[in-house]
Image (spheres, rainbow, N blue to C red):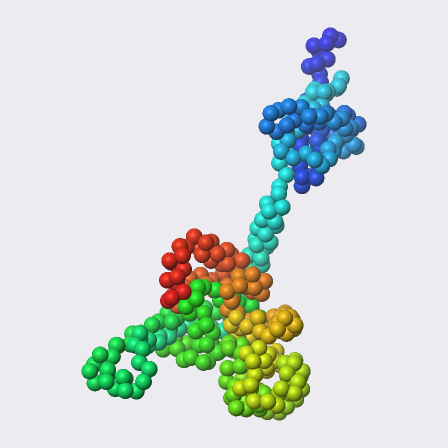
Length: 391
């Protein structure tokens, strides 16, 4: 048999190259019917820019026809894998550019993967929620609320009377704090409200908490609410801390018997010690916050309303308060949370509601909404942001 006949009888072989997470490069020798074991593969490493051969490495394939090249120190290089053939198989070669991902690229890929997983889980959860009608914790239907505001700076009765008689008093105008707002929050959901200052976030929380009554629309609440809007609001400054526990607790809906049973726990958590018997007018802002927080979170409410209250007290108390809130959030408690910390919204909340100029801009999975919000904030001019804050 002549050499030409031998060549024609050889089988073709292919080299498949697989980059194993920038750690190693697999060269796999394969024909249509089999893999080639114990065969020599040469790896030529070239400078990625100038195509200058740097080094050659010879590796034999294992039983699965795989030769593995360690990529340590090889980045931005071209690698050529060559099989020179034998009496049964033709030669083959393949090239690949090795460009390892940087730390930022890897973190971004991991984030995108995690984001996709959360989005899928969120959509699945929403479908489950929507199947039943008895699992709604909060529902707003076309809720609107306006305030009368004016720029007059009348600081005494005499000026008020004179300007009223002369009809020079500026007319007040209506400011629509919330405008036709509708959404549903299901039992056990953790929901964040985001938006610029003055968007209407805190107003919505006060409507849901019963502080404000809307001009239009309907608010449906299923369960008891613990609103942490302004810690210490409702305290009588002439009363002692002890007396305010019962006063503030009754405002939150706790009866006297319950408050007596929880009194020692509230005092211990607040870290006020003997100050509990002093009038709260002598308390610092931090002490008032500690007492207000301790009263509001003494039980697991059905619905927890939070308005920028994760920074109460000193460093030790902030750690302790976060742990208590975390335990509430891990339970079946429904959480509605306003914060300018997008990191907290991402960490705590499954759903986010973007409020803009008193209206719902968008509702969806928290990471997705936060990404859109941040992207728009980055692209907004300083004048546009200033206008939003003023409004």
